[in-house]
Structures are given as C-alpha cells and as structure tokens.
Image (cartoon, rainbow, N blue to C red; front, side):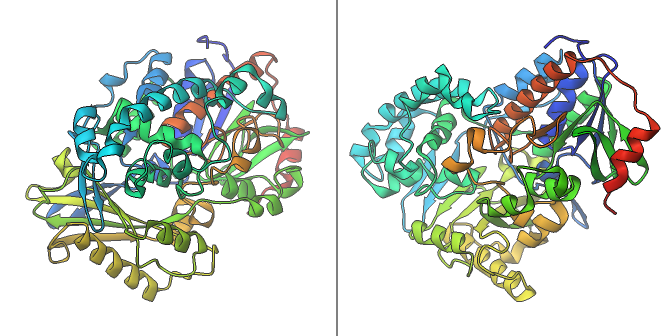
Length: 525
C-alpha cells in the first residue's frame, strides 16, 4: 500500500470499534480524507471500558475482549502507518495463560512452557500429555497453510478454487468438529475440553464448531496471551490518537442514520447534521443490525431482512463486573471454570429456554497484572457466563431472571474457588443480552456475531467488499474472516486494501445537489 494513493478521496467510516479504527489508520496513511463516525461518546464499541467512579476510587473493566492473541497483526498495522506500536501500547504477558478449573477437579495452570504444560495435563491423563507436542506440531502446519486463506478476501465462489485453498484442505477435516478432531490426540474428554473450550471465543460449542479452530488453542501456546496495560480500551484509545495523528477526523456522539447511495453506489452518510459526501463508505458495526438500520431493504438484493434473520448466530453472555475490597491473590489473571456437564451446558445455551444450572464461567482477575484497574486495596473481577441469544428459545430477561443469573454466577464463582466475594463487593454492574442489543447495537445480543459454521465462512460470509452496494466495504466480526480481535484487524486490512485498489482505479468526482436529493430520499428517521 503506497502512501498518497488516495489523495483527494473522501472515506466515511461508520463505527469506531477495532475494525473501524484500524481501517481509519490504514486509509488515512494511504492519503484518504477520512471521517470516522461513532454514535457513543467513546471509542471501541464492545472493546471499550466501563469506568466507574465510586467512593473508593475508580474501577475500570474491559467491556468485552480481555486479552490479545497474536498481536503481531496489530503491530503490522502500526508499521504500515509508519508508527511503532510499542510507543503507543504496552503489552504484558502474564506468567500463565490461565487457570483451568474443572468442576470436580483437577485444577491446572496452563502455560506456553511446554514442559510445564505436559506436567499439568498429566494430572488428567499421562498418555494424553505425551501427545501435546504432536498436537502442536500438526496445528503449527495447519496454521501455516491456512493463514494465507485467512489473509485474502473471498468475494465470489471462485475464490474457493485457488491454490492456497487446495493446499489448506489437506490439513483440514471439514466434516469433523473440534472435539472429534482432538480425539486423534487425546482420549480423555477432559483433555480435549482443555484444548477446545476456546471455541467459546466464537460463541460456539466444541462439539459443533468446525475442526479448523483447533488452531485457537495452538496459537495460545505458540504465541502466548497478552494483556494491554490499561485494558483493551487503552488499545482503542491509542489507535484513536494514532488515527488523528494521521489526519482522521473522529466524530463522537454522531450516530449515522443511513448509508447514502446513488445509482447503486455508496456516496456518503446521513447524520442528524445532514448528508456528508464520500467516495466510499466503510461500515464497522454489527452486520445484521447495521444492514437493517442503515441500508434500506430495497437496496439489498442478496442480504434481505429475511436472509439476515435466517442466519445462525452465536450465543450471548451474561456479564458481571465487580469491584471488590481486597484481592484474590491465589487466582491468576485469567480463570476458566469448566462445568462437569459441559455438553449439557452448551445444549441448554443453544436452546435458550432456561438458564443452565451447569454453567461454565470465564473470570478475569486483571489486577494481578494491572493493579491500576482498581483503587489501592481493591481489585476488579470480570465474570462472563455464556447464555442463549435473544429469541433463541423465548427466554425473557425480566428482573427476576436477572436476579437468578446473578445468584447463579456468584454460586458458581464459589465453586470455581473464588471465596468470600459477595461480602466484599463495592461496585457492581451487569450486562444481559438485552443490554448487548440495546446499548451496544448487537443483533439478538449475539456478542460473537454470525456463527462460524461451514455454511457461514469464507465466501458464504458477508464479503469485505459488500455485495449489494458498490463502494461500500465491511469490517468487523460479521464479515470475512470472522470474529476475534486479530481476525477483525486482518479483515480491516483486507477491506482497506480492496478500497484502496478500487478507488485508485477511478478519478474523484464532486457531489451535486441532485445527487444528494436522490440519495437521501430513503433516509430513516
């Protein structure tokens, strides 16, 4: 990508989540006149923070993602923009990846030190521990051959028949789930779960998630897990400052009402202040929510409302953010508590009719690594419980259900080894699927977006270059290549490169009054 390629071209970006911020940096570096619109008063979307001022002081929590896997991609984005990431963001690697607590034992300290990892897994099964290196070696090769596939767009069915795809297929078992694939290496179900619960990062069960995603656990052990000092929101804030340094205008508290089009091409956005012209529009928002709200259905030939509703969506989460007096020194930065009835737990989540009594939990004990997240003498606990998304099975998030969920989480926290928490709570906030949809614009509250099933991957996922509207590009977890911060950053790079290539082929044209009258005729109120 050459600096100055898009000189005098205007680009509007809708949404200041990680994909929007990365796109803003890359496009501004390419010379575009970039304006980034964000409806909230802060950057980051689900990657922002909760900053709670209390009598004790300030507690800060990540809203959604709590760690960085494979930050090399973000570093590359900074480098392409002529910047050194280390001057903007401080990453710290916790001593262990996480504490892995099985409901009825054992408890393991999972680490990227493979000798130590083998000793931990031997607590489950000695024979399985001996196969860890084989698992890592095989997935190292799988990762190597599949990375080129994840680094390019799939804008048509023909993209499936390229050489890199055929090379990758030899390492995949497309008819198998993660759990079935892992049975090649590990006979004990608990060992397989230790290397497959990462499918929750996609909001999916390891018993149904495609076998490709064994690379998630591989990446954790190969590259480690990183915590950004100040939390994930600190990364978003740094990217925002970098974008502004590159010339991006960031307009907070400015919701976009519609992506404007003329003769089938995106040519700007409509806000409460009027129409803003652009040569191209990048949409970084929850795909299903954004399409239904920002692009009138008559302009969407492929992605109709009916098709959007027929897609499969990930689970949602019930979140509990707790500021507590004291600390939990015997627990690591990350704890994963795995239910004894894990398969039943996920079945109940997918049905969405009841809260699962057998729930698993993820807990971030951030002050173990980053004490500045809480006042002196206090700490933060971030607790995530997977639940069904809205309308998955009719579960209604009444106050009674919210109280039930809180009680269940606190009970399961105790079971996971977090003792005497409730009596020490000094700040508390909960987010349910209702708030995910209402406050964070997540369709159905499905926080991991469109499910990563075989029928919703590659060319079958919404394209980086949107099929229904020319000069409109998509970034975020709902488009190719999918969810997760490193994958979203990679998608932003893809979409930005497509936009740069497309706009560089054409000369800029100025808007006309007639064009704006035509474009805004379907504006939503």
